[in-house]
Each structure stands twice: as structure tokens, then as C-alpha cells.
Amino acid sequence: MKFIKSIFDKEGNDIEKFNKLDLDERSIVFYSENSVILYPYVEEIIRELQNRDQKVCYLTSSKDDPILKNKNENVRVFYIGDSELEKMKFFLRLKAKMLIMTMPDLGSYHIKRSKVFPVHYVYVFHTITSTHMVFQKNAFDQFDSMFCVGPYQIQELRATEQLYNLKQKNLVECGSGLIDKLIRSRSSLPQQQNFLSKNNKKNILIAPSWGKQNLLESIGIELVKILLDAGYYVTVRPHPMTIKKSPKIIKQILEKFEKNPDFLLDTNTSSFEQLFSSYALITDWSGIGHEYAFVCERPVIYVDVPKKDYNKEYEKIGLVPFEISIRDKIGEIIAVQNIETIPERIEFLYDPSNNFENKIQKIRNDSIFNIGESGKVTANEIIRIISEKA
Image (tube, rainbow, N blue to C red; front, side):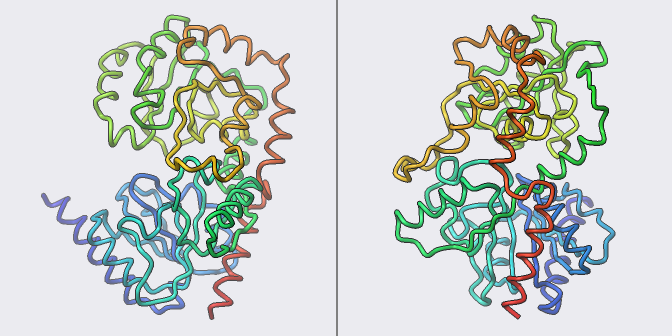
């Protein structure tokens, strides 16, 4: 009871502290929702702003957000709780020059534009994906700026604006801070990795998206059994929303495989250690496939479950979504009814003679802006925007 009380006390105290700041102290505000922690996706941006002695505020609705342990005086962190009603009231009265977040659908649910101040709203992508299929139709309509990962997003957003006669947003060629961070982390690892588990078996990572028709919820148990029977070490990394919304499937998987020494359930989704140590990645429509391919420069096995088309009008845009067009270029697509062939396909696909590395490097360089420099480019744009609002 004391713990619960302390969390609520902190929530109220932090909101009060934030609201008492001078406007200059809260010019740049980041917001992290509870289900997808923002920090890994904006760490490069925040670091660049810190290098320029620029103060930022970071609001979070997750009591597990690693940035709550931050000690940097230029980054002020505030825990504002996860009550939808309280968040709605807070954001309606927000005073800040800029709010940056990875949460789409601004204005549609509990996060709405401020009624009391001309805040500039910025969307940062937390995954390398299209804008017009996996998001809802109006997901980005109320944002002022979009910090885009690659050219395909700019093409999609401009086509959407034209189709629905929307006001043009400020679309910025930024890149992916997460990809930059992971590439830098991988460069410190040994050049020749064996990808073996402690049991001296090839480590296979299953990291899907979430939803009733996605990999884990539909064929997860069957797939894990096939891989274990084939002699692999299997790590299952559920999507955070699967952990939150589908605890039953997590329980079933644990009951079936928990005692197997060649099985691991990894729920630490803020860590990317498993990405680097995996011989192969099996996924569905999750953006982790792009991260694995573009960072580890290794192919991906995609199980062809039904696609996530939250926007039923996406075909009107007239552009093939990035995640559809790229799958067979950076890996192999396996039909659900053929998952028993996956062990065989792993041994073929990941053979060094297939030379996927050079092919993936070229696709990555063509698909992502400013590789290695996204933090600097994005920080420049943030400072430009708030300077104009001075």
C-alpha cells in the first residue's frame, strides 16, 4: 500500500513541479507512454541536445522508464502517471513550445492538443514502417511535424495529404536514432560471432508483433516445438502489448516449455542483447525484422500471418507499404502451413555463401536517412523550430 501511495504522490508532485517551470525550461518536451517506452528511440536526439547545453523535459507514464534514474541536470524527468482522465486534463492544459512523442492518433483518444498554448506537436517513428497501412487512417493528421525515417514515409505522407486535401506538415529527413545506436553498439562486438547458446546450440529468436492473428498468438507453441525438436536454442521475445493484453498465451508457452533448458522467454523488451546474439530471427509483421536486418546485416524469416492493416483505405494511397515491399528482399517469407520447413530454411538462408550482407547494406542505405547522423540532424531541426517560436 505504501508503494502505491508513493507512486501516486510522485505523479501529483511531478505534475505540479512541471507546471511551475518557466516556459524556457519546458521549451522541448518529450512524452513517453506506458506501453512503448520512448527513451531508446530518442536517446540520440537527447544526447545531441545535451551536447548543445539545451534543457529538455521528459514526461513519462511508465514507472519502469529507465530515464527515471537520469542524473543529467539538462534533462528533467517527470512521472505523470497512466490515468487516461488525468493525462487528458494535463495535456489539454499543456504549456510548452514543442511536444515530441511516438504515440500516434493525436486528438483521437486521451492525448489531445493543448487548448491554452500553441504547442508544436512532433511525431517520431519508433519503427521502420509505412505510414498508411499499420496506422489508423487519421493517425498523423493533427501533428505539425513528422521526423521521418526514410524517403518512403515522405512519399506516403504527401500522397495522403493530397488524397484527403490535408494541410501539409513539416516533413523532416531525420533517420532512425535507434538504428544508429544499435549499429554503434554492434560495432563494439567481436567481428566473428558464433551465435551459440550456453548449451552450444544455435540461438533462434522469435520476436513477433501482437494481435490475435499474429505469430505468437496463432502458431507460437507449434513453432517453438518445431525449433526445439530440430536442435535449436529458442528465445521467445513477446511484444509488450502481448504481455499486457494476452497473458494467457504467455502462460501457456511457459507451462509447455519453461523446464526445457534450451528455451528462454525474454520479457525485457527494452534490451537489444538478444538481437545481437541470435543466429536467426523469425517474425511476422514486426518492425524488429528491419532492425535485425539493418543492424546485424543478416536475413529475416517472415511467417506470413495476415498483415496488420489498421487503415482499411491504405490502397487508395497508391503506394505499396514499405513492410510489404521489403520482406522478400531482406529475407524469406514462409507460409503458415509450411512452418515445419523453417529449420531447413534456416540452414539454407543463413549460409554465408548467400552473401546477404552486401545486399542488406545497400537496401539499408537507400531506405534510411542520415545513418550515423540522425541525432545531429534531428536536434538541428528541433532547435530551428523552437527558435522560430521564440
